[in-house]
Image 1 (cartoon, rainbow, N blue to C red):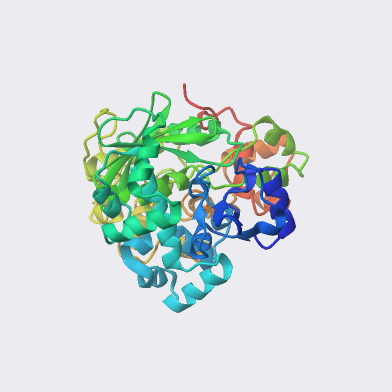
Image 2: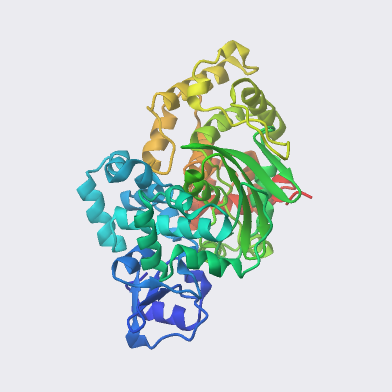
Length: 490
């Protein structure tokens, strides 16, 4: 969008928050960059230039605005709606892969050379993977500086910097303030109280956001011991690269309140990325809803509760296992099967609040399970053990770097994987916004009540008009049934 100067100028002059994260405005006279909704008086048009990323602004010598804090804007929805190499690279960078594995590790995951990835990112985002990762480290550092009491030296390494000197130089260059000055400024603002060791932060999103189906679905399908709904918050355990953690996510007007407890603060970047992915917070609900409203049968559902998101997962392998356990059984039965696996094979954790007891077992932990111990039909046991073996040995990968078409083909080749299971994984684990479930019971009931075609083939043909947002259409169609997944728990 940053190449459409006229559209960008209109967004800046109207202070339209819908475009936060889509592009950034750099002011040539002040050498400051802002989000489109910055509250200050818009600069003269001749003094504006536009960039596709904060990293590109920083690389061009601009520093972040202290009023609108562009580093805290929602991420671009473009990276969640695409499956090409640039979008997959951006999802991996957001997950902290460059910090942990470097550019060669990023390139290896994508199946390209480091030079190719560098060239593609520069062409589309105006910055290479190192600059993009540096911008994210600066954002994480600011978050830790302003919301925790960690010593600044520990903040540096927790944010992914290799030295305190690099940390100091980057923060000063990006924010025009030293780390100490950032902490002093933050001390003037009242912060939500947090227990020792807990990082409390706000996760921004583009409005509108309808929390009913999002948190209703997560709470209704929660696996005991791993997830729970408590005191208005969805809580769960997280398996992270350097350790584990727990998170509590609470819907608030204009943001999601997150409380993170991590065994290693270096996991903060990954934990935030996983939480944003879980709640689909980088979506553009206006674009989605405008498209679905063009169908007269869907329009009343959209108008009744706009801003529905797709409830996703924090771990693709976990959801794939749970999808198999949920084949042809009720939601309650699927939770029971998953809870048994967790108790038998999950790693125990301590939760100060007492409701969470385990991490969901990894594919490696499940690789040696005895199929005879599973209270499942024999064919389902074969499906589960084959899936687990493919995940454990790396034959099948379900992560931010996964190509959606390739993953569908690999899943379909496994025994017991039909269209419902494959598309469920594509929708919730891989984040494909166009995944569709025409054979789902809830979708078939909704189609019957709304006067949509009844057969899967005919319904799929009819749903062509909803592309590329069919996964969101599924969320609206599910609301036709009075099911707990559609309601925010009490």
